[in-house]
Structures are given as C-alpha cells and as structure tokens.
Amino acid sequence: MADTRTAIVDAAVEILDSYGLADLSMRRVADAVGIQAASIYWHFANKQELLAGVADQILSERQSSVTISEWCFNLRRALLRHRDAADLLAATLPVGLGAKGLLSEAIDLLEDETSLPAPDSAAKAFLSFILGHVGQEQARQQAVQLSVLSKNSITIDDSGFESGVSLLVAGTAKLGV
Image (cartoon, rainbow, N blue to C red; front, side, top):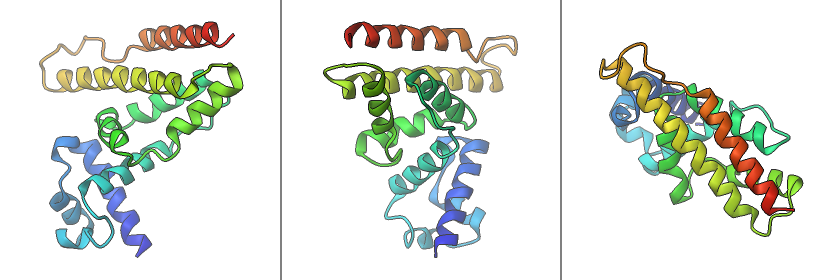
C-alpha cells in the first residue's frame, strides 16, 4: 500500500516536471502508475492531498539549514529543481496541506537568530518572498520555453534573490535587537 502511494507521488512529481501544474491530473498520474484513476483515491482523499504529498516530496530534497539565510537558499534551490513548484507550494500551504513543518523551521531559526516579538510573521514574510521570487523565475523560464521571451532573457535572478534575503535578514535583525 505504501509502495503504491510512493509510486503515485513519484509519478506526480515527474508529471509536474514534464508538463507543469496545470496538466497534473489524476488521470494522467494514474496512467503513469498503471492504475485506474479511481484507485488513487484509496491513497489520497482528493487532488489537494496528492498535491500536498508532492510538495512534501519536493521539500524533502532540501539540505538542513542552520541560519535563516541558508533556509531561504535551500528552499529556493529545491523549488527551482521542479517546474511550477512555487505555485504548487503556494496552493497547498494556505489550506494547511503539504510542507510539513516548513514555517516551524523558519520560526525556530528566527528565534535562534533574533529576539523578534512575532517570529511567525517574519517567517511568513520570508516564505512569501521566496515563493513570489521563485514563481517569477519559473514564469520567465516558461516564457522562454514558449518563445514569449528570447533565449537570452534572464530567467534566474540570483543577485535579486540574494539582495531580497539580505534585506529581510537585516530588517529582522534590526527589529529583533
């Protein structure tokens, strides 16, 4: 039973990478695994729960972090490895699915590094920045693939991301002193 669940999530990740979030259907996942679409519902109550499993798998690829800056860069790297991963995470987090402990990790790191009165708000700000930035990078990558942007267009903005993280870290340090 667990092997089938793992196979379903693995297939969903492959479909996400190949076709994107919009084309990640239960039928397509079932076909990839070699089962009937209805069989997926033995393992996942609905598509949102499957997407949460995909988000958790993507996030499990991250390295551990000892600072909030490392956490930001590790999360970004994991998201950039998978097409539409930022959109996927943005869709699952608000409903409390997927990304088990993601905000808790950031809160713990912020509590270790600062004395912020509301580290949960700061953690949400970091996460919102990461999802927004990576979402834009992934949208630009897709625009290049669709020839909407030229192949010479900048799709990955390392310096912009680094600047944004530095700004957030400096701001939280200033507030947390």
